[in-house]
Length: 476
Image 1 (cartoon, rainbow, N blue to C red):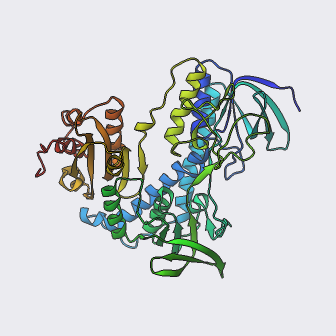
Image 2: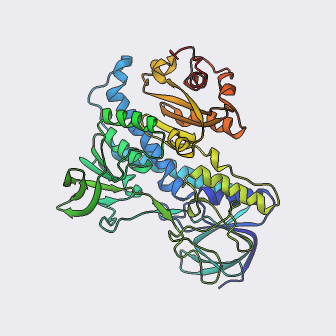
Image 3: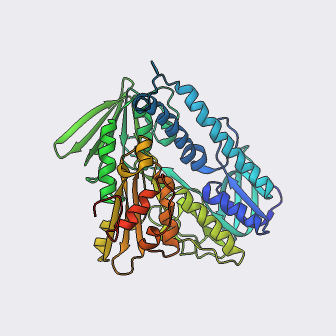
């Protein structure tokens, strides 16, 4: 083992939370190292975590490719644009996705170099005394000592005991990003973000898609009206979403997967070419902690931290998917930056009440803040205003009239408590709600902001006006 290297900050994990923490710490003048074990498809180190390599970025690349193909077949005709015998070259599409991934993972390496962050490629384990041992890919081991250590290990796909990943017929999100051909019939267990997004990709490209969801309600975390509208649009597109469907057995027979599930009508079986298991993710804390560190894990393997992401062990912090809260890349971004600033003596902070959620389907689904069902359960008095995209000139001109915007405000103070959207481009529009809530703004504040015409953002303006029944383009 080589001589121990000393750092002000050592970050284990170079995903969204980790690389943000490392770069911000280095910007603040601290000697910083970042450790990551991931390899790309070419077998070389690839920074950026699940998000950049096999999550957010590659899935959006495929979503955009499939959207172009779907629109060519189903939407362009309305514009007077026609094409005969449209075909999809899956290999080219996957190649484009891989090129984008390589661009961004390489970009993190360049940012590390520019900010003087020292990268180490291998698996890092925290030992007592803030010592981190790194088992490198060549089998050698190095030892680092940090005044502060930030654990940013990320998360892994949850594997079901009766549906083990074989990376050919039964896959997780990684496998579903790399199919070499469009499955004739794709089965999906789980109607969450990953299941809906990747199910949408392959449906648009021609696959029959059946999604089995154990819960009785569709998108229970979203506003009920938004979920209802989204489900209606997905049904129009041909996505077969079966609720209350509890899968009990998956067997691969003759290059097909036989999936047995039970719903209100009894036991049923479907046969699919590929099966995507997307039932959630778990903290990737296995092997992260040696004995005696004092860092605590809960029953699910999540690292226990306080409101400032501190573990209770001097100089040890944890951020991102491996701690409490939503497993969202942007939540990890903010935690990583906040912890780096706290270490430097600055007032780092994350407002968990204004973290936006987005599902990148067609139509998109987005929200920030409380849903109506949550406010009812809390007993909070509230009022709402909504406005349909079908009454927005820009949306109709785009041929994308589905969906609506809902503003929820406190019945007494008018303070915005939530913004809920389903429709075209709402992944961008939701940030009007984030900004308004961050500055404790009211529905009236939103209603009095001039929005350009014609734009999709006018739906937010009219929804805010509708809160007090003064929308111009809608009967109140």
